[in-house]
Length: 302
Ligand code: MLT
Image (cartoon, rainbow, N blue to C red; front, side):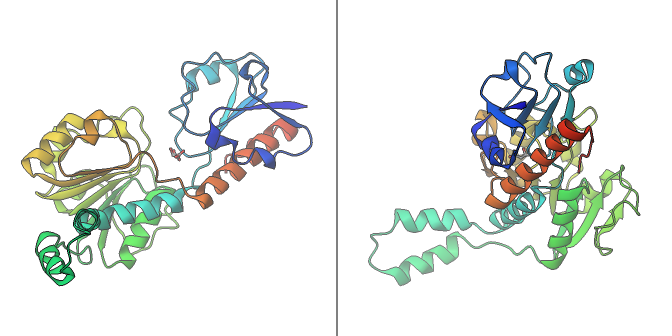
């Protein structure tokens, strides 16, 4: 019998997928495996009997990887399982930045008692006029599962798309539409793109990469989207760029006291992967990986 601890309520999705030799436990000390979503495990005492941790999502920065390596605990994630959910949120983010959809909705709520609807609509046309994303250039930094989906979908919205990823060979990016223009230099993205979206993990070399110097190379009035990790962006630099108008809008999935107070930012509370479909996909993948490992010793990080 394997005891599996689930570490945050959302990761309980999928626990019913365990069949046969499994029992769920709330007690980490007795667990042979852990199923976790985004709860941080850094402060937790990992028991000696722990064999594996499965992250029902892509990012593994909530897991103490060095300690796991020392203790021989195998760590799985669910790459790509929530990519479509994130892609759709990025597209929504671009459209929210281009059109003041939220402003319009809020304004109607605030003026709902105005009797003359035609007058209201007339005013709204002046206050909430936007721009279109068709014909604009999007830069995608990181062409893994999510970045590739965003790039392809944006082509279909009429955008010109440039992509940068030093780790993926031309052959490796098999799912990337050939109309996506691959560039070898990040500066080409900064210099040419009206919208820039980042899809890389937070690690040495990427943490803080969107800093004053990077922002200075971007086009004036750029829209920057971050649905990857908050650590990638130096928030003071972004706040200053929003204040000066260098960055027109910052769309981020990472709410904190700094980002929530930024002028012209659109901030979500880490919701991009929160769809029924993405959560199911992540849970199925994570549970399958754990069962495969615990029962057969197979390491399949799909
Ligand atoms: C991920 O890394 O895939 C996201 O953090 C997903 C989530 O919301 O758990």
